[in-house]
Image (tube, rainbow, N blue to C red; front, side, top):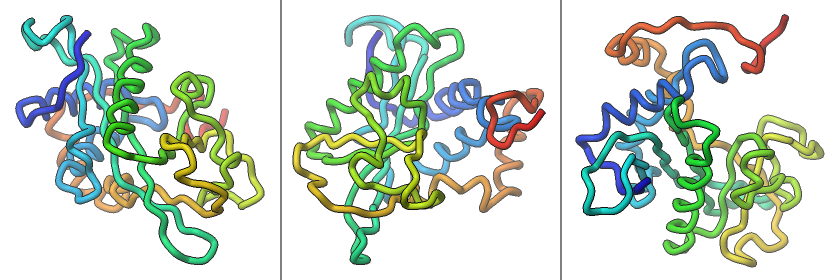
Length: 216
């Protein structure tokens, strides 16, 4: 497999990949592909960490089918004294359904985190399954005294994770993390999202166990 920068020629293929990867995972249908579509023009978007994984091995082979993608964004933590502390997040990270559970997602993420360290990025937060992301160096954000905006401060939030990439970058601070506003673009602009979604082939939306808010 090969990892390279995303190019404008990749946009539609990557958005369709993202749609396939997240369809019916967290909700009936998904919105992650629209988040990506809109984020590329967001000032918080980091082009240097907009990466695709393709079939093939080596830069001299043909580009090959895109099987994975990850993007990073600037973020902030509100410290207890009210000041903002610079931080970063990533996602969506997508692997084509045919290639899931084969280790490609972890390889892509580890590569991207290595690039982030080279750029001087000091701290990452994200929402995800610790059983997967611990293999990339993440742990509960509460261990770093970073609180999640939607949960009580004293909560140990099992899906809110963090990793200090530069030792000592965070130190002994304490604060609250809010996901970047760009991640909520589909909820804030439902008509625009529906118009965008209509440009893709129709897929069945299903309410499935494991989705947010699922009840028997």
